[in-house]
Image 1: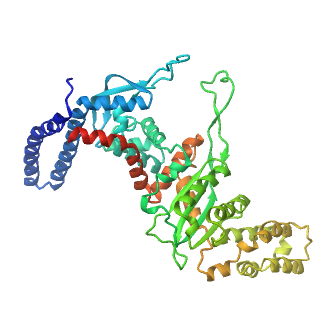
Image 2: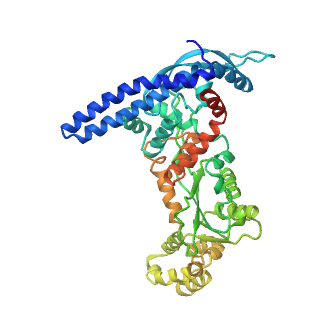
Length: 483
């Protein structure tokens, strides 16, 4: 195929589009007229939709054809490739998927990693090459980015990759479950800091300034897929894997108003990790720094009684926000009631009959923990070594300052952790904890991250910021090619 110059590219695009378009429009008008004469509005509108898809494919095909023939493009690609230690090999025929799902074959410049000039030359892994121009244009595994993100969005919402593939097939888009899985893997963030930046628009940097902020934290459950070591057992085709339960940790960051109600106009930040507590704290720290927690009017930290929450997160908030941050720590009211009930369940049936649970629940709501201990000792004559007193001393007394529900309610602060409980169910339980699901930790974290953004209104931020990052180099090429 003969290469073209930049000045010829624009004219080529128009010529490739013009004549087929006129013919297709004339044919479509005839079909619409016939459909309406028969009273079939649905058939007429379907013809219009088909024409729109056809025209979109025509524009893409014409644009790519002219772009990939441009001599200047290859020259620029060689320069960009050299910065990545890659060299041009040849043009190769590849199939790519357009936004409509249509697959077309193009000749794409193929680059491979340049062999080292010194030292031992290794063969390198299979598939080490790259269709550099497609990558610069935002194609993900040869799938146009808008279609790729649609497939990813569908994959994190529905119960499995197989179902996502089936739905796409019904729409005329042929993407296999394994292809969709590879698309999901491709958009994961390389590190925790860039992961946060991809969700924030420029206008959201320092978003928490002058606002009341609710931070809710909790852990979920999923099953890890961890390959067994050693030789494959005799008679088996695979080595097998362990499927231990692990606890992924999740947080939600909401802005609340003066009445303690969630400000719905500001989408929350929901994220988490399958890693250790240290990684969770590091991830949360990046969010707090970028969102300007040090300039928040007030910060409310809400969670259950898990020691790791209260040992680590308040210290993090104070270290990031400084000593001037107004921090209120609250243990979820429902968890507190449940633990009080569990404490009473350690008593014998005879002693339980003497207890008015509603009375002690009211004492708990008013924050009178020591009075609960004193009255139980007097009422039931229990010893300090009894199970109920041990429970009160281990759970309730260390958390007295976090169980002032009456005071917090009067200050218009939330006392229930429904937001994080809901997030755990929606993000983790309904997709990652489904029966028969076992996950590699890195992939599970990618799914958790993407699913949280889809469900909580930050998917467009992620998609747009990812696109801006990927297309920086290509914009210069595209402008030069079409001007």
